[in-house]
Length: 276
Image 1 (cartoon, helix red, strand yellow):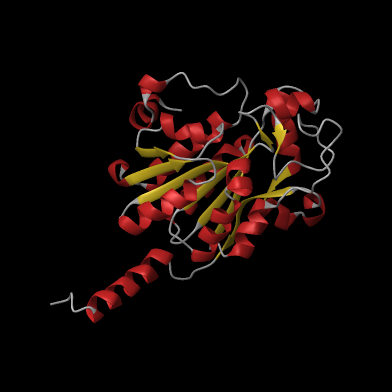
Image 2 (cartoon, rainbow, N blue to C red):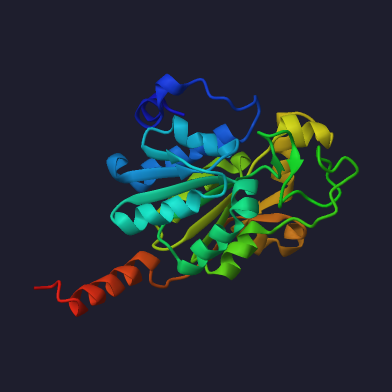
């Protein structure tokens, strides 16, 4: 990251960060900061909200107004912020367990409401901070501390869940494809409505080591093999089989929740005679 961006968008007094060497979270936050800058957001009118977990430590390093909230509750806090101050840009950073397990109910209802926030889920397919337990996105047969003989539960397709629940922007990115990551997150930030972006991340210390996938370099090579940009997949449908699509996967328009909520509040005030 360029020194100007580091000095502007990161809290230098909080560095160095706690993430393990080779972890993808730092790369994804790097891209997110670049995307915020590209989107032209006013730093003083942007709020970053996170829950609990490796990914959620990001808010502590980012130089915005930030909330480091309870496990699974980041979207609930973000809802309150957006309804109280709809003019603010709200970015929510979660991990796969934070979003899809304990926070699953908040996740689907934020999508259903189409709240105008950007929800970035960093998916490393495991609970890294608390010891390597399997998460709602851990693939079948993968090893974890709580699945020493292999996970038998199919993992969530987070992008599929978001779209089915009502999100009006759905994207997937990977740090091995950094230009696409920056562009996709920038588009998500500028979209009006619930923007959901899944960031596929490597976890070499827990997931990689336990499943014998090699170190960070090997995991990034694998990440490149299993992902394919949407445009490339359209040109080569055969080569896209069995691979994760990256980029903008879905986009539509409908009124954002806070706009509809504001109209209801206005009606209530008129009925109560508060317009006088």
